[in-house]
Amino acid sequence: MVSLYVDGSRRLFSTNSQNVGDVLRHANIKLNSGDIVEPAAATAISHGQFNINVYRAHPVLVVDGLQTYHVNSAHQSPRLLALDAGVKTYTEDTYSTGIITDFVQNSALGEKVTINRAKPLSVKVDGGFRTIRTQAGTVGDALKAADISLGVQDTVSQPLTDPVVPGMDVAITRVSEALVTQTQTLPRPVQTVNDPTALKGTSTVTDPGADGQKTVTYRIHYTNGVETSREVVQVVSETDPKPQIVSVGTKVIFAGSVEYWRPQVVAAATANGLDPNIMNCETHGNASDVSSFVINGQHPTGLFQFLPSTWATATAKYGTGTEDIMDGAAQIKIAAAYMAANGTGAWQCK
Image (cartoon, rainbow, N blue to C red; front, side, top):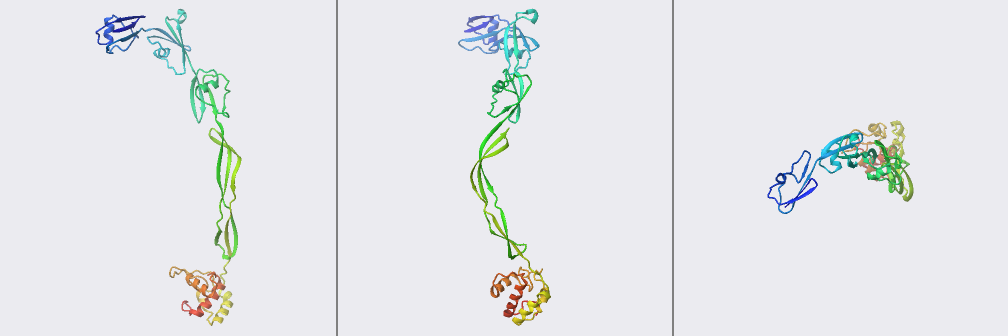
């Protein structure tokens, strides 16, 4: 059983036709240019109830502003009629339809479709540009229709109550603020203390100190996502830094000369029964001399060219254990006691 809807009437009949096109031929239905058949002519006829619709093409006048287009179309939708006329449309466009009553003015008969164009405007927002089309009357309504929400502090380059003008440029500045709690390190200061017992040019950290810490809640202001200013709301906690103490040596070792040291050498040598001339052939009176020779991985150093390891042993036994190897007076005293007890075999000069 087939129900055929055509030319404003319904025809109901049974058929053995294989497809829609055969049904139309058997019913003597002629299709004109632009007519539409649903379903298509090649569609097979299924068992049971089957419906066929024939939509006749009719003259349509499409009006797009000052432009008019004549088209013969079977479509019912104003948008599809505009597309049949070759007119580009947008989702936001609306349409009004009617029957042409002024045949002379429109130079046409039939249906009239008028396109009500949505107004385009460019919106700069959130780091980009958007072109929106709208039927809204005001800037505020246009933004709302485009799902562009405004924050309480956001600003708009055009008053929201201004009417929308095609091609209008609208810029939105996002303005916001946030409460942020941040913890920052307060670097420890460095304090230096002179140490007259340590050699000049040396330093020692005697107290490492400690960094401080400060936790602060800020109110941060942003413009288009970029921080523009901040203000302190509350200092949550604060620990003062503890200074690092660095001991800086100020002791200057006097290099001296043979004649400068001679009185001390003679006195120490005489007291220990030694030849005072041994000093001269070792360093020629230079108390800060460091030899280029390497013995057991060490450089002979000072007036009497002690190896650092030997010096440590000698000072521990014949001194306080803290004497500086480049202290001329200390070397004279320790060397005399060491030579008296161990002989002068370790020295080149006999």
